[in-house]
Length: 190
Ligand SMILES: Nc1nc2c(ncn2[C@@H]2O[C@H](COP(=O)(O)OP(=O)(O)OP(=O)(O)O)[C@@H](O)[C@H]2O)c(=O)[nH]1
Ligand SMILES: [Mg+2]
Image 1 (cartoon, helix red, strand yellow):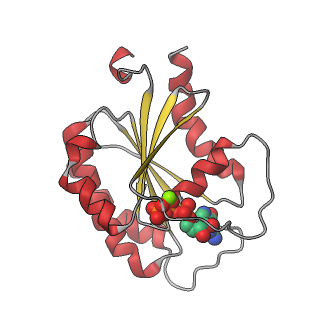
Image 2 (image 1 turned 135 degrees about the horizontal axis):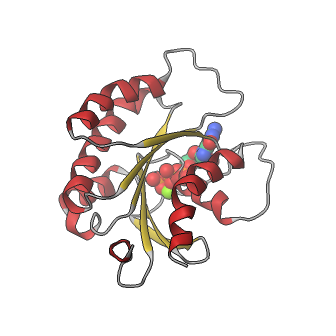
């Protein structure tokens, strides 16, 4: 397992996706220990570049990569600064954002190529987010459309991935997406 540790003996997890996808909200929920009942999505500020924070008793170092276009372009143009030594790559898709699904798909492909190059052993996890209990898509399910686009690409690269449906209105959906993937590994490092 030693190759999974970086110099600070921490596992590096990156979370990426377009702006407004819900990345920071997900991390905020994970950080708090108690269940909260949300009536409406909280007001959030866009993340400016990369915000690093630790999770799971400090065992995991999370890089929250703000998704505004200016930052996305920087990550893709300077991959060595962001994509090295990653153990987990979480990619968040806003399944309520019909108009920007194509951009999100393209961004994912760009991210995926760089992960394969700089952190080939990273585990890739897709979060189909904003799957709110009362959400009723009038158009086709965006999750299916996204998967149809990327699956052939992933198969060509012989890469497996996991995906989870998540929403901030169900803390368990978020906990599951992380605990199944990450906690087992964190335990191994005890
Ligand atoms: N309906 C709904 N809204 C959500 C959910 N998760 C987050 N939001 C809302 O989505 C908006 C954006 O959330 P953020 O967490 O700031 O998104 P982000 O991906 O960190 O955005 P950047 O920092 O700009 O990359 C906020 O208004 C959140 O309250 C969810 O599961 N359902
Ligand atoms: Mg953010």
